[in-house]
Image (cartoon, rainbow, N blue to C red; front, side, top):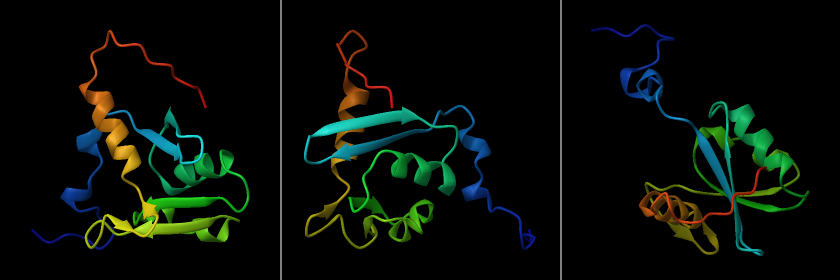
Amino acid sequence: MVRKRNEIPNWKATEKYTSKIPVMGMLDRESRQIRAKVVPNVRRETLQDEILNHIQDGSKVYTDSSTSYLGLRAQNCIHETVNHVNECVRGEVSTQGLPNFWSRLKRTSPSSLFTWTVM
């Protein structure tokens, strides 16, 4: 089957995730607090707006190398990335705090007490 030039490849199609609700998270390393929020989509504009609304100018922002974060460097913050194909940590640049949080959250029983902060 020949794919048209502007057609989204099957492996990248978002229709297979229609039953999932996108949630983004941010870890403040100084206060050790995590902010989690349901977002309407995972488009670049949505994610970058959420990040920029919750950081101060000059803050350090560490992300993976997803294209959703391209352009953050030009937004008055220090943006460093980790390419998970090659590395998990580069100096103090790491995104491993959030996957640990998501993993622990998934294993927790619903009866456990959580304090959620609405962003």
